[in-house]
Image 1 (cartoon, rainbow, N blue to C red):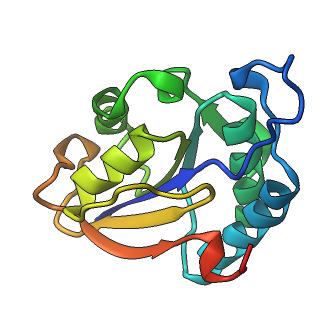
Image 2: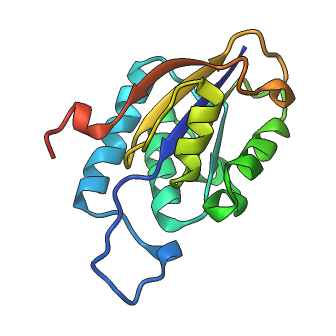
Length: 167
């Protein structure tokens, strides 16, 4: 069985207009949500074998919170530029090339690609995965990442910060 955990980056700051989109940091809510959602994900029994993240600051920072909760050192986060803005089909191609020795992969990225990828692989229709939203998809009869597709994924859970916080 293969398990894919898809995480949209936590809430980012728009306070500095001179900061590029790629370099935007997390805002206070993002700094609160990321470690909390990382803890909830671990409590749900997720132990990642591999973390793959967009190198954009807000996604990578979110990934680092989850890595810390998982006991994974930052240097073991695989950064892939194509997650930043290449479309969900490119991200899917990347996932299909994942080494089969990894059974649980966490992927950190951006909308709309995260929402489209989750909808496609889970068989559920999502309009918008919110910031720091986490989806977990199990591929129960899949032994090779190359075989994941829209026909064999089952949603294990979908969580997001507003389930736990009012704002």
